[in-house]
Image: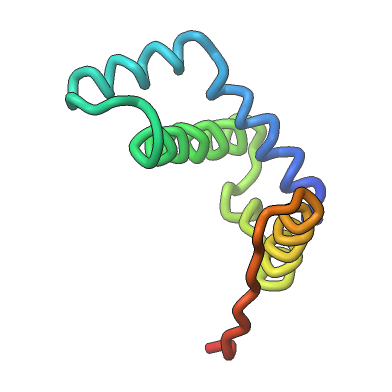
Length: 101
């Protein structure tokens, strides 16, 4: 599966986060754990929900979820594209190169 197909697949899985049931469960969890569903706590909970949706969707379609992982080159390309979009929007952006390990 190429990088664009992986991105489309992930975008489809992300739609689960907008579902009323998922929104209500995340709010209930935040209330039960006594935190406000915003900022880093919201991001963390949304990330868990997104990956659960991604894996569930892949399994339902008979796809090995590990096939959806980006290769090193795909990940680097995605990061550079994100940085380029931020520069275009005027967001101060710095790229730090590191030696590969």
